[in-house]
Structure formats: structure tokens, C-alpha cells
Image 1 (cartoon, rainbow, N blue to C red):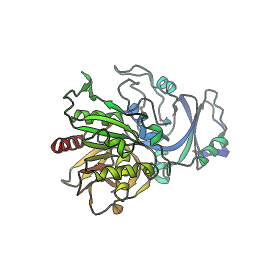
Image 2: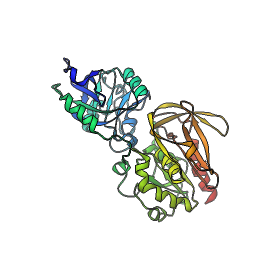
Image 3: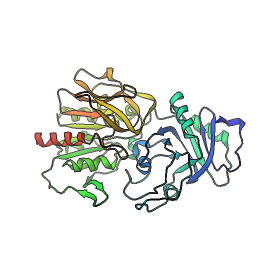
Image 4: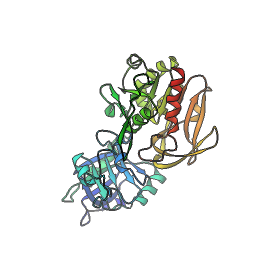
Length: 390
């Protein structure tokens, strides 16, 4: 890494990452040509890069993968969490190799090109990760072209002028535009997607889409729910018009305080109905704000598939999947909000429940994709509670 004004592109460099603090990282570009500006973060997952790239929670971000072998199993139609990728680009250590997997249908490089996403290889990803851990997640520009010529000063200016994720509402950009029904259950190699066809007598969940991952919907169906998805800006009246037995608040990108300007008043009205509510990630943060809590921007965030979380009821430790750059301030929560989960990495809040209502949420991703399945029980808890109150 070096200062932007003191370097020329080295021979063979067809890609570059320019950070707002002036650092320049040269590498080999792949995927789409062009440039993109966003927050640079790191992800520690060893598998599931296609799921990571398509997670709507990564909108506005460039991902530095700590695992060196990314792209080696190609891509397929099943390992996606949204219709299109939402991460702006990715940074990897090793060049993408030819895919070696029976499920592959398209080389990762071609998949990135077809989806307009930029890759940068040949980077010391561990050094970049240490930089992020020490200094926080920086703004940066990732750029790629085949002839290897870049106006580094212009890229630096763009990185410094980008406002950052704090104060930015991205949920409306990634949310569905209209309501729809979801039917697919969990996927397996033998049967593909297993449908839950137990009938319309199943508990009805209305999921508010602030940036939904599809595997959340699959887990709700697998737990026995009938699911309707509504847009992020749906009013309380529009949500309740679907006559839900329970309400789900989804994950999503951006600053929860910004999204909360329109989401929190809706959640407050939904809380008044005393209907069961379950929130994940951004949904957890929005729920916290709705009951009087506050959220803060984290130094580096939590992103990966190996985060230990302690369940306070019985002391069990769940290995979880996480992807968030904001956190709930525990001390800001009201007396009727009881902490249920805590991060063993830094002690940050990872879950709470209301003592006077059937309402709970977690900061991490119990649906995984990618990641472990230690926390799938939360979907059973939510849907099982709906059966008891129906």
C-alpha cells in the first residue's frame, strides 16, 4: 500500500483499489470493467461467496474476502439470496481458477461480468483486513480496465467525497416494489427446493422486506408458515390488511436510523397490536429503535460465518453467520427489553426480547447462507409460537 500521489500503475496491473486515506492497492482486475465507490469491509467465510455477493445487506459495500480461494466452484442458479448481486465488488488474494464442481453452470468471472460487478485479485487480503481492524472500514473505489490506465487522483477524490453508510438509507433501493407470496422451503441436493404444501391453515407471516435474503423465507416455510412479502415502505395498515398471525422484520443494508425514519413509526403501530414479531439484523436494529433504543456505527463490523454468540438463557454458544456494520446499544433499551444473546468476540448485543409482548429479534443471521445452522431453532420458535396463539 502506498500514497496515491507517489505511484504509477505497475506492469501487469489491470485493477486498483484506492482508499480515502490515500492508500493504493494494485492488482489484476477481473469481472466487469468500470469503477465503483463504497465502504470496504472484510468477510471471513470460507464458503458461499455467491450467497455473500447476492446478499442485499451488502449494498454499498466492497468485500475483501479473507479466504484465499474464491470462485473455484463457479456459480449456479441456487446459491443466490436475491435476483442480482448487491455487493459492489470483491477483493481476493488468488486468481479465480477454472470451476471444479458438478453444480457449476458459469465461471465466476463471467458471472461477475454478466452482473456488472468488479473483482480485484493479487491483493494481500490479510494486510488489508488488519488495516480495516486497526483503522475501521474505509471508503474506497475499486476499478478495472484491460489496458491498466487509471486516474488515481480522480479515484481518490471520488472515495473521499462519498458520504459513507452512516446516515444512508439503502433499504428502499433493494426492497421489493410489490407484495408477493413465497412458497419454496429449504433446498437440498436430492430434491432441490422442498415445498411446504400443508395448506392455507398454516400460520400466516407477513415479512417486511428491508433487503430480504431468500433463505430466511425458505426457513419460515420449512418451519410451517405461509409467507407474504411486502415492501420496506409498507404502512402498518397495508401490513395488517394481509391479516397476519405474525410479522417478520428482515435484514437489510444501510444505517438503521435512516431507514427508521419511515420504518420505526410502522413498527410502533405493529407493536400496539400485540401480534408476534421476529426481527433479524436490520430488523433487530429497527425494532430496538422502535422500543426506544439506539444504534451505533461499529468500528469494523461483523461479517463472516464463524461468529460465536452466547445464548444467555442456558449458556449455550451458537456459531453464527453475521453481516452488520451497526449495533444496538444495550444500555439504551427499555426495562421491558431483556437481552438474550451476546457476541463473544466483543460483547456487543446480539438479541433481545420484550417481557410483555411476544416479540424478539437477533443481530445475526440464523438462516446462514452461507454459514452454520446452529440457530435454525429461532424459526421454529417463531412459527411454533404462532401455532399456539392461532
